Every structure is written in structure tokens, then in C-alpha cells.
Length: 164
Image 1 (cartoon, rainbow, N blue to C red):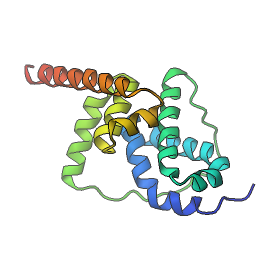
Image 2 (image 1 turned 90 degrees about the vertical axis):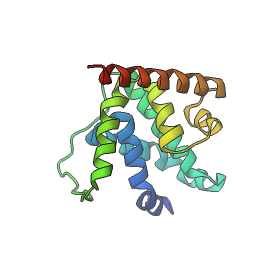
Image 3 (image 1 turned 45 degrees about the vertical axis):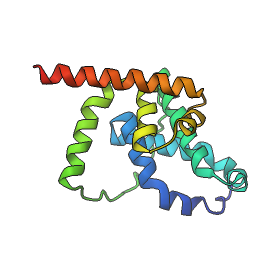
Image 4 (image 1 turned 90 degrees about the horizontal axis):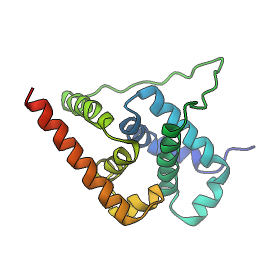
């Protein structure tokens, strides 16, 4: 199967954002890379159709989130060993970015998968409630209630850490 037109350019332009979102969901760079790879493998056959519809990024984001949620429900992650590992350069981080990543890495794992996905999409991706509902395939009310529950849970966790 030939590579679809424009997919390589899309990946080059959006790979960093997709990886960051995947990391926020998984809290693990290796799993984040696997999640992005699995997402792009699912999108590959439909790429031409997505470009014709006009907003492939929204669809890719939805596939990323639904794949993450599916992974959380089942044990096997679908990894397959390869003979040659691709080498990628990891850009250096600034101190503030490291501090933020550390904080997120400690707090986000306290949340159930759906609440975590809602917070990542709403506040990290800066998506509207409607966009999050579309990306997750749920109602606006579900997004609002999951956001409220997640924020309450994080506030309780922060208070518990402060009183130690």
C-alpha cells in the first residue's frame, strides 16, 4: 500500500503535539510513542478520506484518545517486536517544562482513564467542551461531569499531599 499524500507532512508537523498528548495520557514515553504509532496505523488507510473531509487532526486526536481508552480496558497492548529500532533525537527541556512534567506525572495517574483524557483534552489541548465530547465520542454533559469529578479528585489529592 502506497503512502497517502500529505500524511508524512502531517506527522512531521504534529508529531510533537501528538506525543505530548499521548504522554499526558499514559505517563510513559515508550507507551506514548506506541500510542501515537498505533493511532497513525489506524488512520493510515483512511487518510485520503480524512483530508477530503477537511479536518484530519480532529479525527487523529479522537483515534488517539479512543485507542488509549481501549488500551486501558484490556491487558495486551498490541506491541510486536521489530528487528531494528528507529533512532529519534529527544530535544532538551527547560527547567520549567521539567517541573510541569514532574507535577503532571505525579498527579494525572491518580485519575481514572476517562477523567484523565477529559483533563488532557480540555486544559492541555485547550479544546472546548463540545470538541472534547466529539473527540471522546460522548455527550457534553459527560465531559462536564468528568471534568468536575477529575478536578475535585485532584484538589483532594493536592490537599492530602500538603497536609503530610
